[in-house]
Every structure is written in C-alpha cells, then in structure tokens.
Image (tube, rainbow, N blue to C red; front, side, top):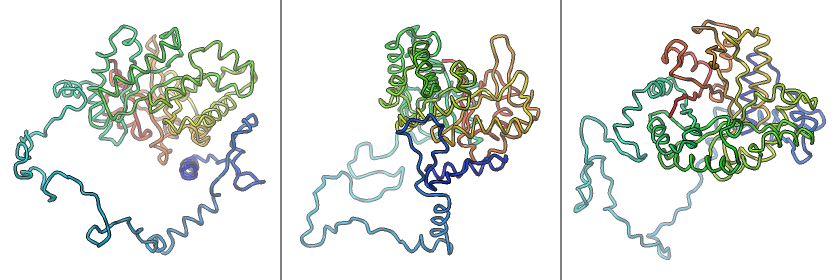
Length: 429
C-alpha cells in the first residue's frame, strides 16, 4: 500500500515538475531520508520492495498479457462432500424450502404474509433504519445542503456533512441537533458527518472531562441516528510540532491543556471517530521561538502521528487554508508548485496523512472573502496548478458552504470537482 501510494503521488507530482526525494545511497531499502534528523530512534523507514524490484514484480505478473496470473488458477476450496461415506456434516435446522425465489414472488408455502413486500407501488418502498422519517428526509433533501449533496454526488465526489455540534451540546440541545443532521446524512451519496472543528482549541470547553464527554455523547448519538456513516472531527495537536525541544513541549502543553496527544488518540482507539483532521495553520510560524521552521514542524508532526500508529484506528487528514488569499490567490505558477510540494505532497509522502483538505473559499467576520480561484471562477495560476493533480484527486477534499455560493451550487461544485474528490458541505444543525 505504501509503495502504491508513493508511486501514485510521484506520478501526479511529476506533472508539475516536482521531484520525489532520492533513495538512500547506503541502503537501497532505506527511506530514512524522508524523515528529519530529529526523528526518534524507534521510528524507521524501510521499503518492502525497491522501485526496481516493484517494476520486476509488475512485469512478472503482467507480462505475456497476464499469462502468469492466469496460470496460477483458482485455489482449491475447503469443501466437504456430505454424501461421501465417513464424512459427517452438522444438521442445520435451516428455514425455507432450499429453493431460489425471484424477488417479489410469494415465498415458501405457509410463510407469514406470503412473502410479498407490503408496498408494491410506483414509488420505491421507504424503510426507516435511521430514526429519520420519510417526511424529514424529504425536507432535508430540499434544503440547500440536500440539493448540494445531490449535485456533488452526481459529479462523482464523496460527500461529508460538516457541522458544529459543540454549541448545541452546551445548550442542552444535542439530541435535537443530531436528528436534523441525521436527516442530511441519510441523503444519497453522503458518506459521513464531521461534527466539530477546532475541537479543544477554542473556548467551547473548560475541562478535559467535558470535552471527552461531548465527543462520547455526540458520537453515540450520531452512531444511533445515522448508523453506517463515518464520523470525523477537526483539531490540532500543537505539541507534535515541537520535535525534541523540551521547552517547546512544556509551553505547548501548558498553553493547550485539552489537546494532549493521549486524549485525542483515545478518541481513535475507542472508535469514537473514524477520521481525524489535523490543521496545519499553526505550523507556519508557531514554533519560531525554538528555531523550528514550518517544514520542520510539519515533519515533526507526521513523525509523531506515525509513531502512534493513529492510522491503524482511523483515517488521518491534514487541513490547510494556506492557498487562499483575500480576493484570490496571488501565487505565480512557480510559487503555486512550491506550495503544492510543501502543503500537499509532503504530508502524503510522509505516509501519515491519507487525505488533504484544502480550503478553497472562506469569509471572515467582516465579510471579506478569501479564495484560491479568482472571483466568479476567474482563472489564476494556483487553480490551474491544482487542476493538474488528477491522479491524487480522490485524496483531495475541500469545504463548501451552500448558503454562500460563489455563483450557484451547480456551477461551484462542477468547478470544485475538477480538483477535489471529496467535499465537506457546511451546514448549521
């Protein structure tokens, strides 16, 4: 999986002329050159197959029109013939008559209700496995978020509902808010719900216990109301950027007591969330006091994530608003390529983040709009460079608010789908 991921990323980056780091000259199987010098001794990088070996493997299985693959043949199944003397098989008391029946036809004789579905009408039958009524789902489908979800799904994008339940939790309205969000989550094409952002970073929670209680209760309510949907949160872990600087670790731990790595890791290992997005905004200049630049802080963060094997419990994402600027991005093509290298390629190549969420448009409290693309989708160098990353499009996501469109949802999502394979549709509970 790691070899395939690096190969795909390298293929995409080669379109922009971005070089993939050279392999170590001392050990062809070592990829320690991808890690910073302050990487802990217990963190090592080792290729299971070098690029040359991987190419040989591919040639072996794909050569001669895949003949070697066909020659392997199917493996013999572990089958017991119950009719052979000496073979004993359990006597299952199975229901039914042992015969196949077409869908919609009456079932076994004397079966309850004759086996015919209750609602055979012109419209499909509606089932209610989520605690959301037909009327509630229909109403949600007509909202701007519901319509945007339909449009985004039709364009091939994976859709997440992005909301904030912390305020409702504090106000004692969590159950009501979850029910509204569940009505959006059951829309076709929606794969999950991100129920909080900047979690533990702002002023919403005063104690760690209250923070944990919110995550636990919100997760449980959403699991019940929208079973089968992925759950996500967005936060930061400032201490991760410190590397080996003990002074930095001490100050960050005191400044952000709710964001202890063990606490956040506990949400993953206990199954409360399925995706964790780590914001990268604080990595830009938050560690200059300790002579840690942005690239080093980012490398430190991903080394710590890998060391804790967080990706074994949940999908890890990185979130970045650095491509946007008031009005539109002013980067040249060369600057945009460098920014893609640092903000997109590095997290993926470090093999810690599986997806990268890039904010493409947002509005501050004063009404000023920052964009990656130009106003009304005017072309610019940054957007043109991002559009070249077609090979890793499924790993790229963005946030979109249907209530404040650039033009309209249909136009906006069409343009966004040219770069992003996933979209978080922001909505209020």
